[in-house]
Image (tube, rainbow, N blue to C red):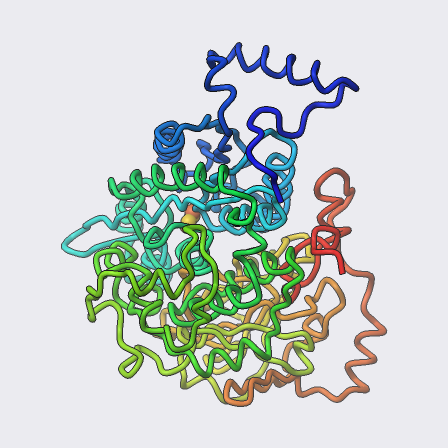
Length: 571
Ligand code: FES
């Protein structure tokens, strides 16, 4: 715990003479044009990640300026610094591979540079989790500022917004319902403003989780990226960070005092109530893991049975994030969930969650946010499955799935890798029926593909053209938060790590029971043992060096948040 702001004198560079170190630091700070007076003020760091490779962060420079305004108005010295940026659609093999790298960047730069508090600005899918993971063990107060969702865009009388509509129209294109000229026109209208995906995808889910945890200012999760309120949220975040920087030690809230087992459970409730992204369970597990808090998938199932889906947002419903903002924001959902939440959790404002909710304006648009006694879906959006196919669990987003496929048995049609999938999925000669179960192997965290969002296997073209809209699909991959379907994901351990998913062969029978939370490969144990013995060594890209080597040496499975072992809290 800090014993008061030290400003630029925090964490001096080691030259063996502290007075010399401070003198040298101030002389270089002078080169930035700072006066000696402002150099003596408490410092609020501003951690940002604008990049031409990250359209979701396009408005970030403006947010940085607004945070600075808040810090300056309060009497502090704002100092912004960059970290790597993770633009979801620009990274190969997948942004998840680099989430842990960004978290290390954030953690080390907060620790190594002089600051008394910090505002971390993030938005695109992996950036908010990376920042919370990196900030978890910070010894200074941290406020998370969310970039906010993009606005929808009209096309032919219809509203479009990334990325559920991206997938919907791509499915139509594959089924022959949209032609090449049409899909090109749609491509230009899916993402038309700064900000994160317009639906309750991973970015928006993580925004709701961040606000629920208490790490962001109340009411800020859903403000559109281009709305003036977003700039005001930035200014207030800067001002509040300064207040925390100068607070007496007893009042100085650190991330580990805000992100606790209770606030993590609140965040899980909200994840379930917003029908949020399956990715968020991986990220929340990783964030909690940095603080020694374990998320138990059996506990997720208990919470899921108690927590209804309350909002009608895409990918499962009708509306977009801008509609949630207009409907009253995340507070509307928190107020509905109040009887289920731990209200004594601290937030960055210094209020408890309960105090915050008592202060809120009661407006809510019931078309978008339903009451507890008239929910969209009586149970939570996500459910964990276990069985001999997924000994350490798998995730199904039941709110985005077809209930008629929840109980049953199917014949496995197996794709051994993403390349195999791409090569054969549309083969007209592929032996395939609509009630088969599609299985994708070697797309988990240990595989060369590094757990891409490939779990949304396309409906094979010949079935799509025949009108098939959904099939049971099973993999160790992830799925975009904007996708939908009866899709079993995150099968752990993954095939590349020697998990049973790698033992499935064409024609095997698989049993799925969502009611029983089971997923079973109906092959006898002796045959599975024989297949296991015949398996070669696990597949890893080679040669390995640098960060990729670190990744493949250290990556943990999905049930441990795909974090690196050495970054988790020490036992
Ligand atoms: Fe950045 Fe969807 S691509 S949030």
